[in-house]
Image (cartoon, rainbow, N blue to C red):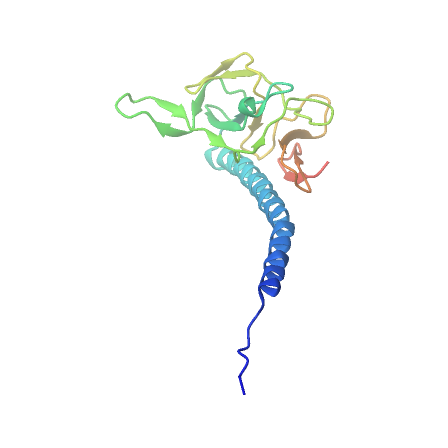
Length: 204
């Protein structure tokens, strides 16, 4: 009597491969969405954490601290989306007349330049609009070396030694919007800063 060797036919193997392929196709987009949503949440946490750090720096150092950030042009392409922000120390508790860049000393010159902080490469600061409010004022022209009176299309958030923040005139809350063009459940957050300096991120 001949014995029959147990095994799988080619048709059965192809069926299993097809099922695995279908499951992979279904799970990859979900994984990418999960990963991109994680990038967005991380950027929100990092940025709000940096704002809280600037507030604490003002309290600890007994002087004003300015945070300025770059806005993307209206209708900007991906290449022109802006995602950098900078910190400057004021020279006074209020009404500072000189601003010193925070973070990096230029080797061999004795001077310093502001170190850029950057959102994740797919998250940016959109232009000010009704749906993407950027309500803080622009009263200083900040280069990487210092700030002088003027404008540069980069709003400023200024914290004071008692922890409060200069909110926009006739407003009860300052707002900063960060956004992504990725397909994620929450592609935009508004960072709300109260006059007392309380910072929180909300989905619009």
